[in-house]
Image 1 (cartoon, helix red, strand yellow):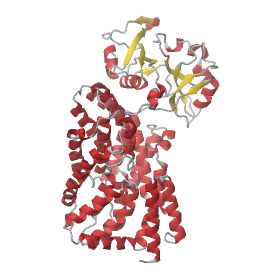
Image 2: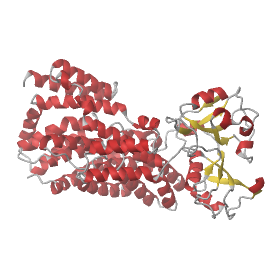
Image 3: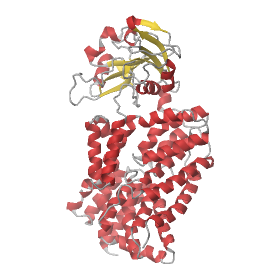
Image 4: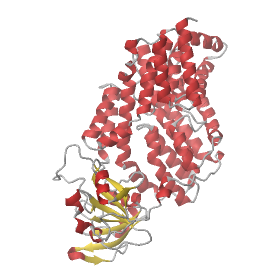
Length: 594
């Protein structure tokens, strides 16, 4: 072993130790490893920051923006709310949720797909009177499996594709991952649907953000226009859009004439509906019925706005010294004087029956205000309102359901047919999402997981140093000595199991950067093609079912599901064994070793 090889191994072992220790964030650990490699002379000065211009960083960052735009569109929630409301069997609900999150994870980042589906799972759990823990962990595992189906589904696939391009001259394409990934996903969905009872039933942790806010129902005002889908339909149809969680409390017709909101009352153009419900239910009713919110100016073509204006809405409570107290929105002329619009009001212990502009505001009322997100904090201070702890409020936010899906489909088509490289296609898709206003610029930057990108950029030259110093050859020779006693499927299984074992303690992206070059060299030394072994690394790194810390999907459901650390292995260990048993022959069938 040369001195440079010793430095390379020492830095990677120390880096893995710091990852396991967990006291330093992963991007800091990667940055320290890069600095150590530069100081040791195994990464040249002029190559130290080459990772920041690598296609991997561009693809991962762009995919996060595209995922955020698709998630924001609300199209998934609308589809599942419309077609899933009648499902009452828990097993059927489990299948629908796990299959939906798996399919969605193939096209958007799996953590984003899971975040979209969790509120729907919580609604189904309430309807079925079961603990959310029954659904959440199987959904997290389904999201991990679904990410295996395409190149952009998960970071390991993106990294393996790029490394394969360096090794054999041609990267994996968008759907090269689909045959094996689809087989594993199908088997996994069936397993999770029928064997989820291996998981103990837990109660979610109390004190979540939604419970802490504990806001009573809001009242909002929305108008039926000629474009509304509920025009000519009944009040009951509006109720059904929100699954009965939002109720029409009054109908205001021409000349301020009020009509009783009976379920069979037919809605006419120009009707103004007073609707009461929680923010999510109101959003489903308003967006699903294409109703026009009172005072909503986010989509007016003639509105005078600056190019950088981003309209959104925020929850705030009226403070003790607020100038809003005792006045109405009409009296204050909020829109003209302050450039903000009152969209909804909530008052504890009281049902509001007045029209929105006529409500006399009280201390402690909670309001939803709409305006330019850059100016809203200053406006709230002027009005004496206190912004609530941040949570997603979609009521009054501009959303375009089909545009982001169309942009994603075009990007995937361009890459699938080899017209554009993945990095260019998805960077263009991310720019298009912002340009066509399917995602506000502020949310685009917020959606990018910058620590992940920094970690990737720092680790790329560190992992390359293992190859440049000959370290991968040393490890591959040692593994070859072990694998020569094994049949071909045993050698492939060895790599798959090693990747699975390392990922919970390292990081799936870091695992691939370290193990993929070793696996390729190992395959070559045994006289095999590297493709199957690279696929094994990607699958192993993408299938962490044993701990809550190896992947963000597992961490995300731990609190809402009330899971304990050991719960993951109870369901995850049998699933891991199943992935190995099915994955090895599937890889060998799709990617022959010779």
